[in-house]
Image (cartoon, rainbow over all chains, first blue to last red; front, side, top):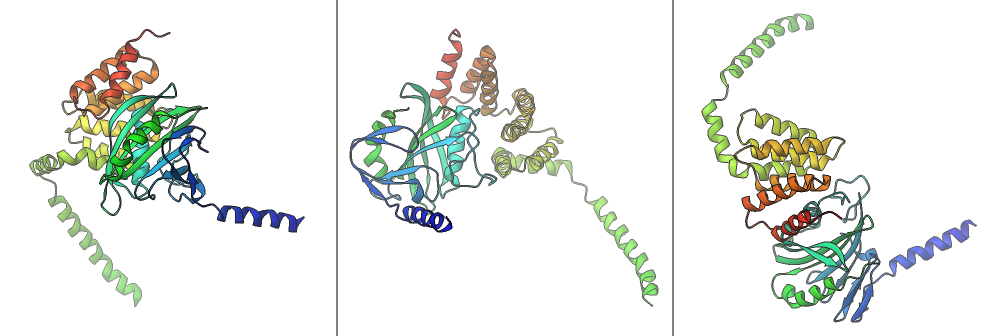
Length: 190
Length: 164
């Protein structure tokens, strides 16, 4: 029995170690965050197990430092960041107003190496027929590089569904901005 | 020997305490200096206090704002900051305390525009549609370039609709 349990544990550890980025072709992508998006071009997928900063998976085209698209779900009372239950980190609350939720996302980004982050152009956005919020982001990565972002969220079934794209201001943000816009508009909620 | 040393030292300690107290009496802050200092830090007061409350020590943050309010200045900013602390703490009764602080902020000449928005959001969550819309409109008037203008305009439009 003990040998069997140890065997199962070893297999589980090996399976976790084997998690690597995967190529994702253009087309619909079902995210573990519980919603689907449609990609126009191929991206690479970084599963949650190899995402050190935040919960949820990331998609990238050229590398995580050059462009990254977060797909996440955050339950009420939980953090978007990887943190323990009692850690002092920003936490999503279902009863928060839209602007408080925007502030929650910005505050979370400030904890993972971004500074001077600011949300602008905060506006209503329908995501798959549900009332959500869309906003732009500006700030700096920890090496001083200016970054821009485009994000949207929708509170759904006591969870926050979040799509957030962030990339260096120089070239990379604009290069993917149109496709990211179409990805955000393609969100298909369960 | 030791007892004798202590007995000779004790009066010396008392003298030192008396001397220090006499210094303390002489260092009462000049009211004009305090006003001048407040005027210098006023443009940064809200940002600094919000950095303090972001650290999460709500009791200390409330005590700090209370001390700053004793001077009777910047009551719009300070009451807004107090409201933010209550809204972050979210303990029982904190929404009512936040609303009171926001109303006090709104009555002060230095009310930050965002205080009007937060007041509107509290009334919106409670279903007090008229008051919510009025406060959100006041917010947009106070800050025409608000970063969430489109979102707030859509909320005002929803508040105007007849509830189903």
